[in-house]
Image (tube, rainbow, N blue to C red; front, side, top):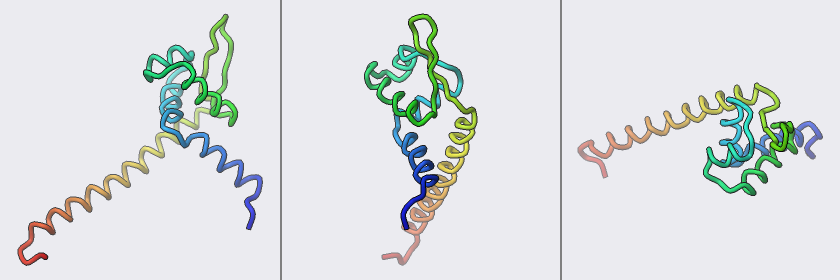
Length: 116
């Protein structure tokens, strides 16, 4: 069954988020708007890398830009993106907690007498 325009729209949104640098950019921009230079300094990346990743986020309308003199300042367009990041962090925590629990169980199993 072919994907509808709505499913493609949703998938494209999540693809825009599907990069470690873009996630980090959003984490920084959810706090306050910043220039490319500020983002560069915070991430320790070169200007072209930061600009490329911001372009992806802008193309999907996740971040917006405004000119302030000669500087372009970027911000998250919808504050709910911050809520999405928070919710994702909770999901990741749940997954990692389950992994940690299984690891402890595996370690206990390895210490039991009669194991092979």
